[in-house]
Length: 178
Image (cartoon, rainbow, N blue to C red; front, side, top):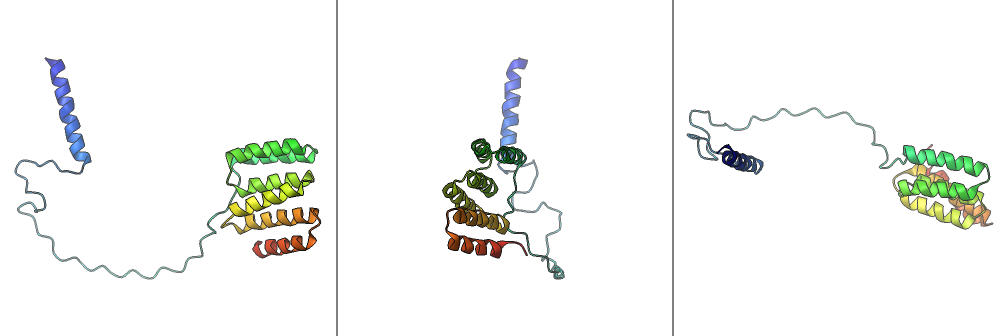
């Protein structure tokens, strides 16, 4: 007999919880219908006007929308790539940075690092492409945009395109924090 009563209690509990979750109040015996105040309680009066709040002092402007930084895993990989590139192993350094890109594919700082490795390996075309990719991702972060423009300028200079490199340097300087 107990086995039959447990499912019934469980069903009743589920029904009550379901009604409560829907926001439907369960009427109590003798309670006033929904929308009417219970008898014997004061009727609400007109709202009390609130006191005006004093003007808040001016706050400094919020920081730029994005301030890119490397996460711990990417930071460790970038450090490893620096060691590899400083040892002349640009291929391994690029592979290490590509691992960092799998972790943070939308982080312009990783793309800039990869561009620097390509530039060190005398691949100015790839460095330029990495700089433009970083620039596209760095919206809202002037420091990251400036770094991307510096990479682009360096890659243009390495390709003998000094006039365009000077223009890129000017763009980088215009974004650099003063």
